[in-house]
Length: 250
Image 1 (cartoon, one colour):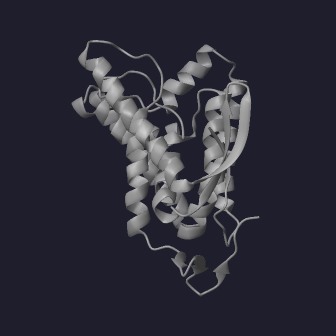
Image 2: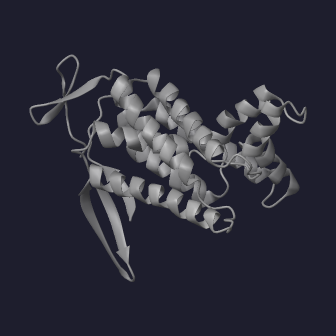
């Protein structure tokens, strides 16, 4: 299933969401300039990705890494991606759901919300994988927070999906809460699967940071409940605090 768009209306232009997407694309453009599979690129990942093992070293006072520098990688890692598909998948989902969360939280609070979700997502991954020496990169933890917020704030919205099965394809509308709840469920199952492999002495290479997704999603759900917003649902429609009706997307 590939999401195409949602039908949740907006009252403002999501300039911050556009900027975040542009920042991710710009950083990836720089990565490409380093050369695919080059030593410089892998050094870039090691320098700006969040390496869980480095936090153990920092807290142990080994002197190999600094505590401040190590924590800064939690922020920088949010804007680093491992491939074109990795980047496109993340920014596409952010394009679909991020505009509504920015519309609700406002241009000032939204970027703070986004970064907090990304930071706590990375910290969840680090806590679950403390000895890993693989750099954790990507915006998916922060975007998972956006998805979690969308689930609780706009459960009545619909998402248009491209559903493909073998050689057949169809476009359908599905309730947002169904789409996002299923996605979250797959991430939880992913954490269970990884733990089962670990308990049986099996290792996984690369792959998906399921714990980061779960941590980001839960963070987004919590924050959207405690942060005051600019829109509210009443009598079958969405309205701003000033009482202006928010018209559906066409």
